[in-house]
Image (cartoon, rainbow, N blue to C red; front, side, top):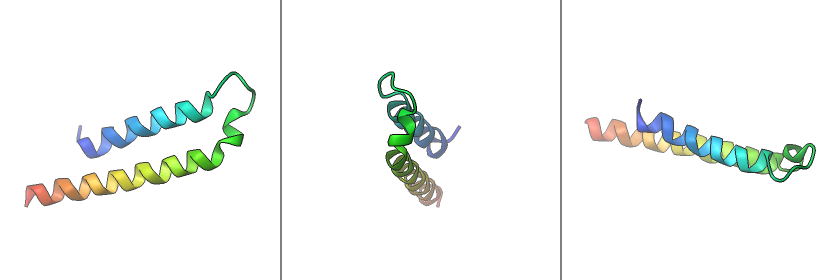
Length: 59
């Protein structure tokens, strides 16, 4: 599996886990929805950057 796939996926799972399971409060993910969206944006940008880096290393 390529690094551009598993590294962003791992980062997303770790970030989502922190925001969704912050304490034992009910609906904690609703209050952290903006942070989860920011995490998704960062993960997508990381994926694109790593994919571009892999393409440049091949050429």
